Structure formats: C-alpha cells, structure tokens
Length: 66
Image 1 (tube, rainbow, N blue to C red):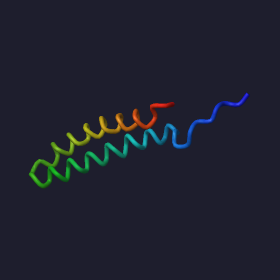
Image 2: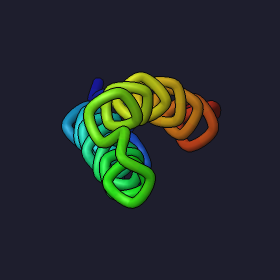
Image 3: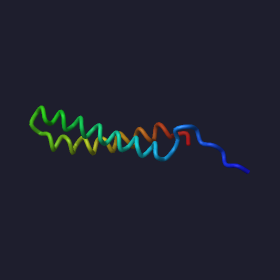
Image 4: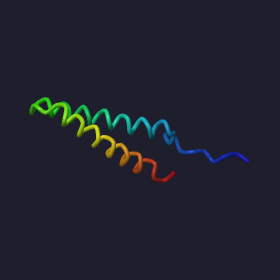
C-alpha cells in the first residue's frame, strides 16, 4: 500500500520558512518604526517576538487540515 499524498505546499520546510519570514519581517518593521522614533533596538526586539507569534498563527491557520 502506498501512503496518502499530502496536499501541495504542506511540506514542513514551508511551515518553517513561514515562521522565519514572519520573524524577519516583523523585526524589520519594528526596527524601522523604532528608527523613526529613536527606539530602534527595543522596537526591533519587540517586533522579533511579535513575529514569532504571527508565524505560529500563520502556520496553524495554513496547516490546520493536516
């Protein structure tokens, strides 16, 4: 018997890349906003942690049916 095929785009590497991309994007946004107001590093770190949360939410919503 063969294994049932997973839907396209359900590779674990896609899930990991979603998390990493959201971390980088949110950290960059936080750093950019922080540079405008003079708090680049603290807001960049806050964006980093927000990116982790956003990434996890994205992975859960995208791969809910697996």
